[in-house]
Image (tube, rainbow, N blue to C red):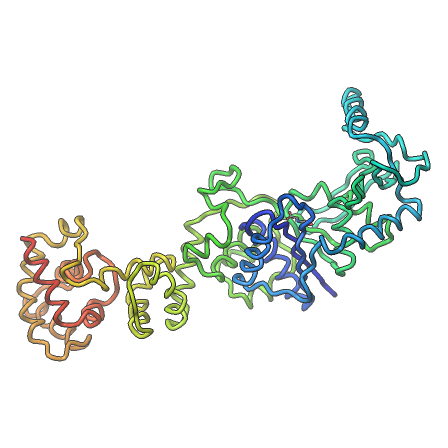
Length: 464
Ligand code: GLU
């Protein structure tokens, strides 16, 4: 099967997660069938479209790894192409000039409503044979009877009676094409075989199909993906995740986690939750798309992100964490130290922001270190401090202050006193890190060095 899909955002805002999910589905379908993925900027709304949004959408696509084939299409550069097709429809008798004013059309709609019908244009100019003229638009001559039927990839068969549609405007009186006209012409010219988009567009589809038919174009396959809802089942609010992709990027999410999460939100493969990109490309064939709206769960997204952070090679994790560490104001950090910190703290971090923030106590001096009050109460109590007092001379004797000898000293104390690690390690961790974070204690202490580690232990002892 030859497949060409596309993503066609309007640059009236940043790329949000709903749009990103549509883009990912379209991209995956193209990659699965070894087809093409195309990209189009729908910038005909001159008032609301902004270059900064186009740039931001392009940057988010790149960050997500959604590459496309061919040049980016801009609708504003194709006005004469749309015009040519409208002229073609006029010439073939599939469209006609209409001189009705907005007020007249409103009155027709009111009349229809009064009769209990759908508000619609009543076809006043349909057979008048008008030519071009000031203030005239062009309408499509829609069939008077029959149904528009299509098999949606997500929603199944959809059938609309043409009586529900009216002779839609395809060229406005100012000469610009309407949205439905431009989309059909573009999707045809770009060779699109599968249109995946949000289901806010499902009502446009029967209209677009009528334009395809009038132009004699092959109708593509459509898939309308339901909205993403908030955890409460209501419209997704900003607080619950209705945010732009760049905001997730700034929060320290990894693109592979966001891609994995968004694909699963609306598509399934049994119970599997974690998919590599290669797996997604292999498995995503446009089936198993969920027709009901999915609920956004930010905790699950963070859980997935934590998973991907653990799996990344540490060099890569450190490279990605560096800008976040810089934002924390830690100053210069060698690659080696940053990698060590990532190794020491990656297990509990769910985002790169959290990971970078968790380094803070390790990059302070013992003087600057602040103990978490809850930790002081629970771990640095009299019993905890008594252990620290006895541990101090053991660590003072360690000459080579590297993980192995530090571990030996700790072990000797624990075993020598007939204790358990879990009696000694928590107060030591509280003294060294200031809170109950980080991984293997001897590694943390070796990172700090002997002088600093001992100063921290002394400072904790002095709390008494
Ligand atoms: N430009 C439309 C939007 O951003 C998408 C239209 C389509 O995919 O057909 O909602």
